[in-house]
Each structure stands twice: as structure tokens, then as C-alpha cells.
Amino acid sequence: MLIIIIAILAILVIWGISVQNTLVKADETCNNALKQINVQQMSRFDAIQALVKLTREYSQYESETLQKVIEARGGMISKPNPTVDDIAHNESILTEISSKLIAVAEAYPELKANEQYAKTMDQIAKYEENVRLARMTFNDTVTRYNNQVRMFPGSIVASILGFAKKEYLAEDTTKTEYPQI
Image 1 (cartoon, rainbow, N blue to C red):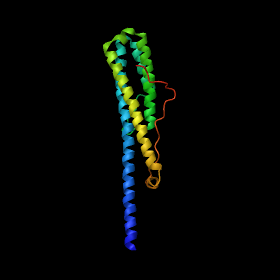
Image 2: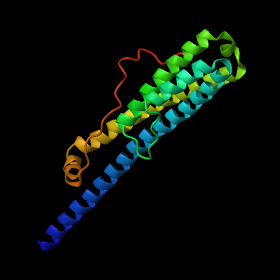
Image 3: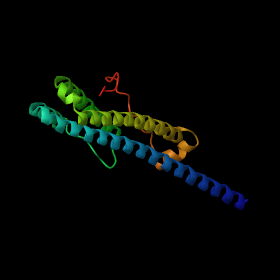
Image 4: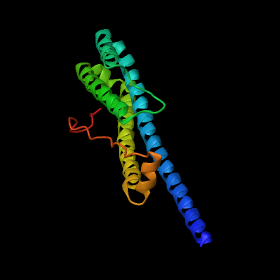
């Protein structure tokens, strides 16, 4: 009888460790996906900064205005462990700066015709797509993680060990389409 009880306890301990390891892997996958979004946003921001420098050649006033927008919005957040709110903040900064850059390009056709401008805009469009894909990946990983945290019997281990449901990246309802850069 004692052997049966010990065997059952051993099975429960092994199962608990297995569930804990699965939850840790899922949590790390979510964290990694969020960091990938941040990396793509920072790359896009670097490309936008290059365009701001390029506008300086065409109009000092316009480049100063863009730089002030960047500074007024608090700059970009690059943290080792970004949160969903950090990502949303970065996205709002990038959207605002992109729309202002498009307006500047419309006002200066010679800037729009510049080869470096065209290459940089292509890079920004690529980063925009990368951010979109990374956001989708993040939300997919959060779905898998949340399923593990909330479904029985894993939810028991998750609650005991403090694993909580994660937030999704909300769709930006003000953004009907991505900036046409």
C-alpha cells in the first residue's frame, strides 16, 4: 500500500514538473515574440531617423519639426524586457512620425525623387511588414500560453506557481490601414 502511495506521489511530482517546464517554455516564447516586435520597431525607427536626416538637406525647418515630434513623444523605448504597453507606445510614435514624413515628402517632390529616400522608404515598408508579422506571432504564442495556463489540469499548477494569463497586443482601431510609405 505504501508503495502505491509513493508511486502516485512520484507520478504527480513528475507531472507537475512537466507542466511547469511547459509553462516556462511557453512564457519564454511569449517574451521572445514581444522582444522581436521591439527589435523590428527599433529598426523601423532607425530608418525613419535616416529620413529625418535626409530631409535636413531639403528643409532645415521640416527636419527640425520632425525631430521635435520625436522628442515630444518621448522617443522610442528600447528595453530588454518590453511590455505590451511599451510596444503600443512605440507604435503610436512610429505612426505619427511616418505620417509627418509622408506630408514632408509630398511638399518636396525633389526629396521624394531622391534615390536614398526611395531606398529608405522601401526599408521602412519592409520593417512595417515585419512588425505586423511579429505582432501576429506574438498573439499566436500568447494564445497557446493562455490555453496552457487556463485549461485544466495545467491551470492548477499554473496558479500554484504564479503563471498568469498574458495580454494580447490589441488591434489599433484608429489605424484603418498601415502607412503607405
